[in-house]
Image (cartoon, rainbow, N blue to C red; front, top):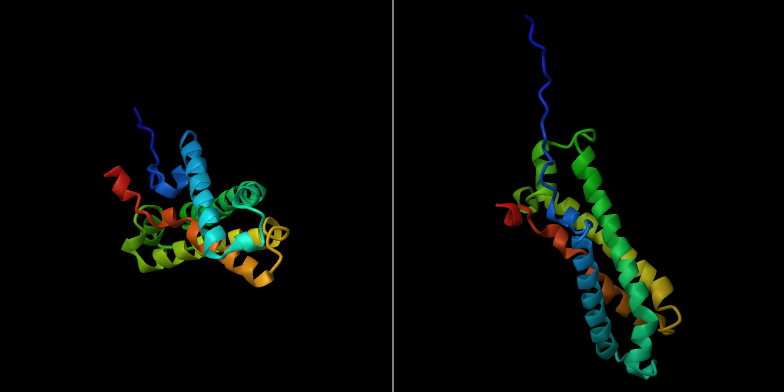
Length: 174
């Protein structure tokens, strides 16, 4: 009797990177709520830090006019940054990336300096999206002075960019 030959299957990505889990239910609800709270606090800080009360009637009106857009644009930007990391993690082999780099992107960024650079680039892409959408859309009617709008949009982009991308997944699985 002849035994069948079996192919060896390697499962490198059985454990998802922590940043990827942010987009799965029910974790996505926690992520959305957390982003909303952070965006609200940053809007409040920007309102007082940049003295927007001079230009705005009050914080409540400013907040109502801006929070949903700031929140949604931030989450869309996070998804764009995560998509970059997902593509590198899943298709890295076909791009000729070494396994240790792919593993570092997905599980422990600080084990490989190139992984830190790639993750920071994905974070900067997300921050750029946050900045552009908030500068050109969210605050266009709310903050008429361009230099002030620029400061607020940059602050929101830098503070709310997806810093969690740098968290090593190994902290949560080991």
